[in-house]
Length: 376
Image (cartoon, rainbow, N blue to C red; front, side, top):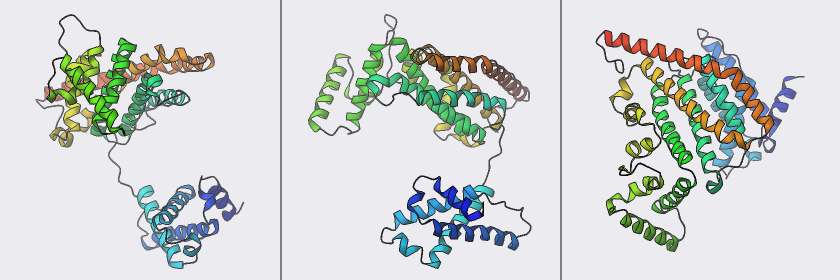
């Protein structure tokens, strides 16, 4: 198969590319590819750049499509006849291809996606997210718990990807959102339909507060309801935002005389039974709010603490998944998951124990040297 035939076949596999001028794109591809050779000839000291046809073609397709949408006054038929546009398109695609694919800045990384510490948990996350993707979602009255669970696993995957990319502080601050998500999930699943119904009602309150309900009459009616509820609970006007966000917790079963605070730490987190994470959550919040810890924290320390907490959140989410969601899937899917779990769960636990040992040793060493293990 010659190069042009291969290029046109490749082009045909991309949705939307059938509407574009294929002959023009092939000419642009040739110009861009020759540009790589010219760059190499002008700077023989840099390492050779091998052209990836797929990546270069994708840059060309997207740049051409973007230009057409951004300049509706020009038709494609007019543009493809202009040599200066051909040179312009090839130059931009070449710049982005060489810079983003070959000369991109990379953070120093403490792990990779091939490490069992990452590959095992990613395998689980991909498997579970794949299962969840095939079921009904985004219908809160019917799918709230599944939607929250799905988002939790999605955030966990994001944390893993950030760690693999060398973004430890970003991963740890993202874990904060994961922890909030899982706490809400635990409170709802422990307290059942009453809590779920209250949570859904407060979602409506939040929509009204943001002005997201089109009908002014409906919005006014919701605010009357909010104020009546707050009055019955002895809350003041200044408490409205906190009531809208956390007032659903009044539906949660608690000990007689137990105080309830409308916040995350002393409300949602405590009701979820995860108050042991208060200090870790506070540290993650410091990073999320751009404290000096974001800038000067020890890379290795934050990496370990983010990975440890990712694993612990995953273990809890996975238990919810196996106890609730597994009962709703087919026997064939259940057996596939059980088979995978029997094969890999021990590796996940072994990796977690190894991270614990490494983290404890690192923290003890720094303290023995009278250094703060968290910061440079």
